[in-house]
Structures are given as structure tokens and as C-alpha cells.
Length: 307
View 1 (cartoon, helix red, strand yellow):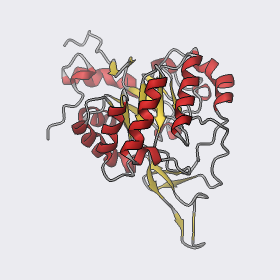
View 2: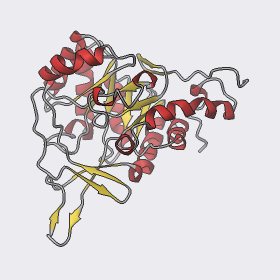
View 3: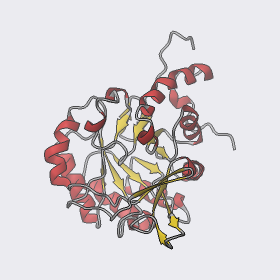
View 4: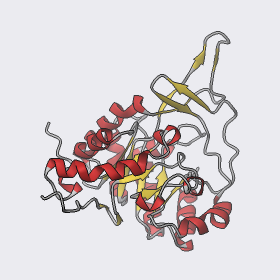
């Protein structure tokens, strides 16, 4: 490949095609409007607004976040204004963005997921739905992501009632994540997203109390990258559908580690908080990596890990 050629960065996630594999993770990018003066949104492979639920949620009591030595611990609790407010106030803006928008939804029941997905699909403007089956900060939040049969059923019912591509975001807080991913694939998921945060806690030993108001929360950032890579590797062996890697990604080497391990795309999360330009910078760095490796397409490097 000559340096004059432009490498092909596009990736296929089931029925969802992205111009490049760099996405931004739900909950770390607001509703995109907050970032439009900081980030050239057209450069992103895809973006995910904050997770929405059927009814408005106040979220958990403070403290909701605490920094750790190698990451961020959060217990936001899916604080959002509900699907009606999302459709009225946020979707019109998101609909006109020049990049695929994947709407993240969470429900307490299968019917919640089906209803939410259907409402978003009928409005138009969303490129795909991400099923948040794995939030550790709400009551019942990970039930669908810790039981294979429940996971399969919710994905299947959403697939039957929604014609948008479906991404299933899974929790690492299970014994065998490959079993849950296989169930999501059996249910018809276009791709699985690995991983959501790792259940953890922080303690103030002087007061003898947890620091987070919820007691426990989800750990993200560099500390969980090795766990996320392990999950991607295990799931790659178990399913044929694409994988989206999430967890501690902050530089181009992190991105490439996930891709060669088996992820077809990645989501940038915690790094957005301290480096708002990280996602677009990574998009800009990808072509040089491909040129250095002597390949024309990013897909030539996906899943090339030698074990």
C-alpha cells in the first residue's frame, strides 16, 4: 500500500455500518449537543447519548462519582428525563447529526425494552439501539445481563418488534460472559458491547462509611482494560457476531489492542471526561497505523491475535 492511498476505516456491525470504528460510550458524552463546540461530531464512527428509560429517573443519592487510583467509580443510577423528554427535546437534534446515533435504552422488564425500542424506531433518526443490560447502579439493572435465558429473551423480543440493528451491552460481573454473549447472539443481536463497568466500591475508613451514596458503583477507566480485553477474547471464541470493545481506552495502542483481540469497533468512555478531543484524535491516528502495518483496510487487523 502506498502512502498516497486512504485506508478503509469502515466496519460492519451486523446491519450497522460505521465509517470508522471509534464510537463514544453512553453516559460520557451527554446528548452530543454539549460536545458540538468541542468535538467535530462528523468524524466519529458513531455516538451514543445517555441511556434513557421509560419514566424519568432521579438517579442515586450523592456522592455519585469518586476518582480511584486508576479510574473512575460512578453510581449515577441512570439519571434521565425519560423517553418522552428524549423524543421531544433531544432526538430532533440527534436526528440531524452527520454521524450514526445509537440510542441506549434500559428497562426494568422485557416489555420496557420492547416498548422503548419500538418508540425510538418509529420516530426515525436512530441508526441502532443499544440494550443496556448491565448497569450495576440500579435495582434490577443487571438481571438481564447475568442470566443467559433472560438475555436471550429480551434481545429476541426487541428484535421481533424493532427493525433497527441491536447492540447488547453486557456486564463483566458474571461467571462466564461468553455464555451471556452467546445468548445475546441466539436472540438476534447484531453485536455485543464489552464491557460495562465492574462492580466496585470506595471506603472512607475514618467515617467507617462507603464514599458513594449508593454504597457500590461501577468502576471504569484504565483499571478495567485488562478485564475488558479478556472478555473480548473469550467472547470472540464463543460467538460469530461482531464485538464492540469498551473499557479504559485512551490512546491508539489501547484501540489496536482491542481490535486485534477481536473487537470490530470500540467505545471511548471515561477518557472523554479529561480529554474531550480523544475520540477524534484517535480517528485521525488510525490511518497511519494501517500504513505502518501495510494494510489497506482496518478489518485486516481485526481478530489477528496469535494465541
